[in-house]
Amino acid sequence: MSVNQTISSTKNGVYTTLKPPEIDFVPIILEQKDRNTSAKPFEMSGVMSCGKGVDLVWGASGSKEVFLMETKGQLRKIFEADNRHGFGLAVFDGQYAWLPVTGPESRVLAINPMTDEIVQFTSEDGLPVFQFVALASIGVGRLCLSAGFGKQTDRRAFIAVLELSNPRGKEIRIIHEATQQLMPNTPPSIQHLDPRISYVPKFMISSLDETEQSWMVVLGRIMPGSSLYNPSLLIKPDTASVEVIDPHVETDIAPQNVAFKEHAAYWNNGMGLRCLRTDSKNSEVVRVLPGEGRVMFYNGRLHVVGIDWWIVDEGENPFRKLSVKMPSRRVYSFQFFVSSHYGLVFRAEDSLYKNYQVVFLNE
Image (cartoon, rainbow, N blue to C red; front, side, top):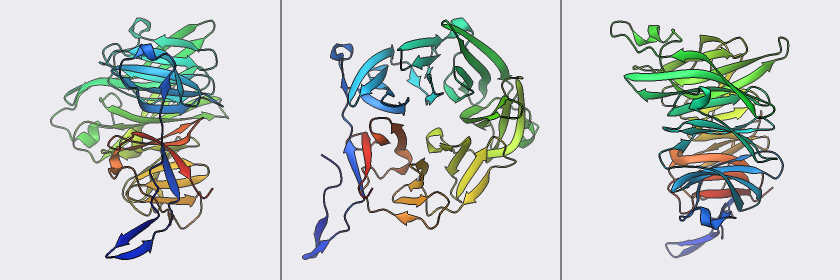
């Protein structure tokens, strides 16, 4: 049964035909193949396409669990951690799905969905404990990661390169540490120009410099102190170079608010669509948006989703508002994922069902 069913209503005794909905939200119901693995219903908190016909799924049913979904709606568990842990957002490099596990026994999973092989990077390999994390692929079997832990007055962060080598070999290189705290007598904006000042990583983007055949990574982050704008870091993982650059992000940015497309990050900052690329001189507003809400790119279109759902073909104007009844009105609880089996997935913490397949009815 879908969310959008009603196409007519009665108001003040007058029968009115409403515009038919243009989007349907179909609840996603998942079933574990090995039901004895969990006593509680599984609640999916994230899904990622890992190539044709395979999804990586993560979430909780008391303990934190990771699954592969080769058949639509059917989950096969491949990893479990206790409820002291959590998950960051995953990335897929074309062969491996990388999923960070936060908490007291932090680790990064490198999962080959075709073979079920899982390589775990842990503290025994030199990986520090972390509470917050951002990551980006830098080629098949290679990952750039920034993570950290601590509270506002005693925070630590680091940048690492994780690499797989056959057979089942692995390597971690810590290429940068940001452990210094703000000093009381110097403006934070000045101190933020020092890459050794601690921070909270929010997102990463990466691209390959074809000329030099080396990778560039830009890290969007939040700095300590009262700063509206937070300068980014330019990382060259092959040479372990890290420098502060001018492009910035707003303090209130959240990772789930950021959309990624062609080595660039996009978000709605209230003034328009802000864009940050690996070669950006600044993070500029590249187009006006019709309102507040999450931005995403899907099937060649830019979507702005808040109280209303706006859509436009990329590079075109104007936006068009779709007729839709949203499962949730709490804009900042929305998340979007792309699944091999379900296409676009909408998630909202406060809705009856938390995960829905988004079906565009006129396509």
